[in-house]
Image (tube, rainbow over all chains, first blue to last red; front, top):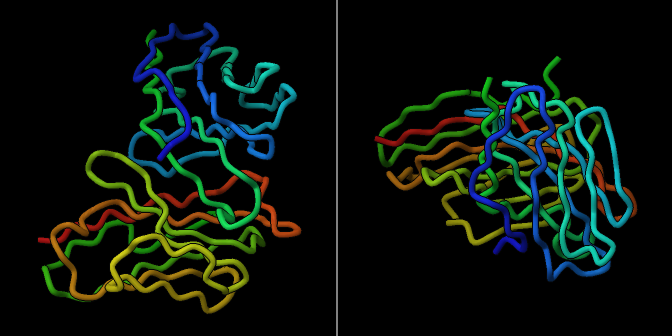
Length: 113
Length: 116
């Protein structure tokens, strides 16, 4: 079962920041937070991941609360092409899970003109 | 250059047939996976291989048999296809260092299997 809770859907105006929340209250100390997105009919695309510090790359920023029980993915200037299902996933990096990603329902983000 | 390529992209076949889906990655990754996305859009892992060794084998019918001839390839063979096998199958790869996978995965574009 997925260990995360996300809103089912969100809307965002083109050009504005999209802030996608995720709750992971049972996260353990060695689990990372990963974000992926899936644009219609395509394979999931890696966006960003982090452990406890905030992270930024060319696609997005990831803000993780100090207690690590929640995080927010920020797309600073959303475009129509950012319309997709966004998945927040927590997972260990080793052990018996060995790379296993457990996907939940994700958040359907719709960017409108 | 496609990083993770799957063939075929679409596959329509009759019940009872045997079919294979091929996957190749040119990223130099050492771990490869098969995921299944059903009609409800849930993505679930089926198998993972690290350096040609089976690591994860979820509760998948033994009609599904993965084969990894080398680190760059992971094929999925399905025997006696059933209607319920209709889904989109995604191959993925990642880099593992010291037994830990803390990098992003790269997914293929999927194979849409329809069993009629």
